[in-house]
View 1: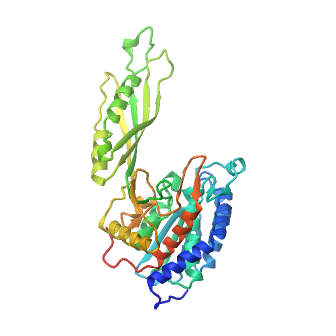
View 2: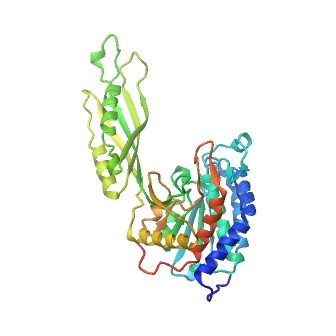
View 3: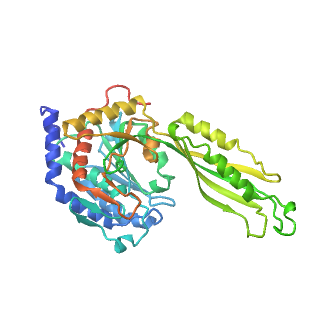
Amino acid sequence: MTASESEPESAAEQRMQEWAHAHREDLEQYLLELVELETPTENPETFDDFFERLASDFHEVGLETDRVPGEETGGRLEAWTPGRDDADEIQLVIGHADTVWPLGTVDDDPPEIRDDVLEGPGALDMKGGLTQAVFALRTLDDLALEPSLPVHVLVSSDEEIGSPESKSRIIDLAKRANRVFVLEPASGPEGKIKTARKAVGHFTVTIEGKAAHAGLEPEEGASATQELGTVIHRLHELTDIDSGITVNVGQVEAGLRSNVVAPEARAEVDVRAPTDEAAAAVSAKIRSLEATTPGTELSIDGGFGRPPMEPTAGNRLLWERVQTLGDRLGLELEGTRSGGASDGNDASQHAPTIDGFGAVGDGAHQTYEYVDLEELVDRVALLAACLHDEPLSTDPHP
């Protein structure tokens, strides 16, 4: 690819948008084919064909690729601009290929294109985003427009389970990045881009009691179930919607049978917080809980696994740049905070990051999951424009 330095930016962006719209049918077919290639997180073997397909597509636009096998997952695929090792900075594009849908879902619920949407398992989260990445790079390649910084694409297979194997690599690359684009689905059918995300924690509360016959000698026991009820109430009292803190006891186990005083109980707790400070505060409150039922003991394990993606100076700078490019493309872009987490939470600790930058639609992880195809075409042009746009000029790092 060679840059057209004399061409006004607005003219180049108009050509990107025209190219994307002219290739809509190709984009639709490509997304359909990706959805038909099932890639459940728990089936590592399914990623071989999928990553081979993506690698071929990245090669076609001039990128080098490397398939990194996983230990317990399907590993990851990386693609990058040749010679990038000589560059001081890169621009990082992050996506994931794994879906929550079990093998056979495509047979039971085949993807289909109707009107302006493509409906199918994994279409929105996030094979739409991967389609966007491939076609944004094709846009630049076909129009002989050079990205302003070397591009590095990382596609993982373990994001849906918290990125246990890919997280460290994402962090390493983010430390070298001038900016990071995370191609998770946009927020809702309105297509809001995620400019902030909450920290996510998981805690396990275990209560030890003492078994006894519930009818003959209940006074000899200590009910872990009774204490669990108290603990659940105290945990839910920590939720503060106005400040963005939520605590949810989502799963509990207790007791042996109805005529036995419960000797043990356990609760699995999901916690979300908007800032590091809020996460530390609610974590301390959870860990300070003590048993109040006589004869019971309480222990707490776990903590926050994803830091918050906060509106840092670098993140705000990148968001302003994205909005400017959107305006030039005739797109009205809105930002929002998401209660969910992604690889953007980790990347944003080291480089300006924009998340929810992928497909627009609705129903992620639900049976009616769909992608708005007209919006996807525009998001292709937007990503291409961002990759072509000049680097963030001030020190962008948090």
